Image 1: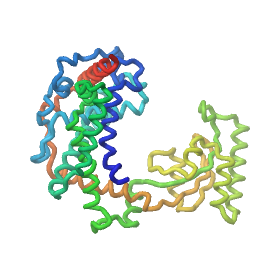
Image 2: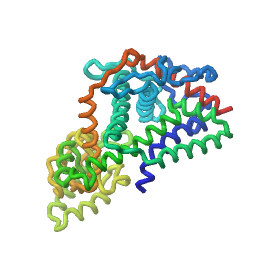
Image 3: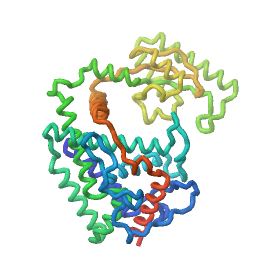
Length: 392
């Protein structure tokens, strides 16, 4: 199991490339994997001429893939690494909208004068520097990647070539569609393994810094995480979001008061809570979350959140009214064992952030002057060309 987790990143990257190769999930074989346009015109993307491309990173940005664009002290990050993460964060953003977004607001201000395009660049920079620092920290600790990672990438790459009819060029082009190369996939996948080794070294059970239950609970408190169940009696139509009439709302309130009264007088209120929840709750998410919700501050409507956070573990709230209806909330305990790995990830991120701050990040003019909208237009043009080739 541990070994398969180490190889997950390699498999993910190759699956992404294989999807580009096969054209799976595309409505139009000649279209890009994403329909967003940097110009905002919504016009179909014109495929790039693949015969003229030798360096995909240069083709989409005007920067050679091996050119250094970021420095962390003496650590150099090439354009190929940075630009891979830039297209990745943009694709991940678009994935949230299920392919329905056709334009992106590159020049729209978000916070503190930062545009959406700059925000995407900052996210890419964080990921590119994180991977570079992981590699550097591993080297300083004399850690090396598990050879099985590179072997697995090679094996999957060979399988891709076979599926492409022994046409390696087509596989290379498929990787280009995600601004990847076999070497870059291997490097990123090895970093996943090195990250696991570093986590074990710094915060594993034998490290002397393995988070205690108290430390995990403190992390959960600081990050604003909590668990809760609720009985919801909706005062709106959950499909249309239209309010119910006054008589229906009054009936819901009376039922909520009755259920709370039953809970307050029950000998085993938590057992009864589950019974009443399963019988009366109108929460559409109940089937998917029968054991309650694990969430954090800012994710739920304010009345629900404020009431839940005011409870101690095992306590039941009074009737709470929100825009959705009447809630009765049960605060649930959180087992530190369920969140220790997440706590370790947070500690690891803090360690990387400290190292990033110590070294300082220096960007070259080529990156600071990059027009993200134009970059994305060319990425979609390159993807369209890869899809068109795959459809032949």
